[in-house]
Length: 213
Image 1 (cartoon, rainbow, N blue to C red):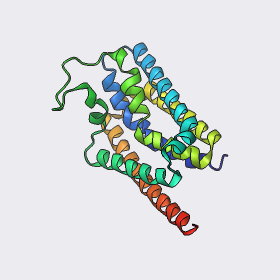
Image 2: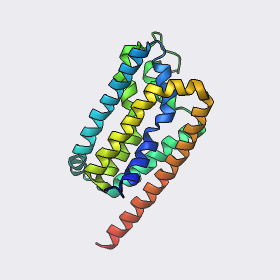
Image 3: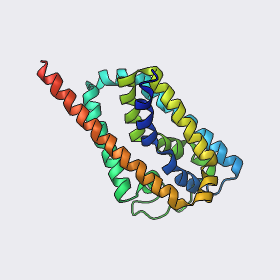
Image 4: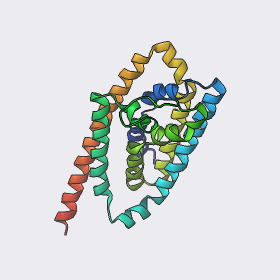
């Protein structure tokens, strides 16, 4: 179990990108007090945990209903991770993707800013904390490493997110927002590499399965 843990933990850590989402968290909770901000942090992490548990335990049933296997998910998930990483690396649009639903189709600012107490579940919990990349990574982890390793990885990653939401604003004030942006770019570079590795593993698995027929 311990030998598999890094393989399950690191992709999920990169997919969630706790460092990169702290500035977005600060922006969405700009009008909140310290107590309100921490309540929203707990609400966001709790929401992400609930949705993640459904995904982990319903993964096998979902595979059966959709008629897909692990290799299909590896390729599609790898493509998704690669696209997300490329968009963030080149365009830096993570904030825009997260808050698109709050404005109009022309990208203008919303007429009424979101209230601090209305953002804990959406978008802080979903899709900021648990987005498409993290969901795909969880499904792959459960299939590849089993429930104990996946749940341990999920719990530790969400604990890191909660700590980042609690103390990230203070750290950003100390080190500066540019530092967080640089770290986010580095994280996305590794996310792109993981996406490529997933695509390669999925294609190799498909070829092996075809040759065994």
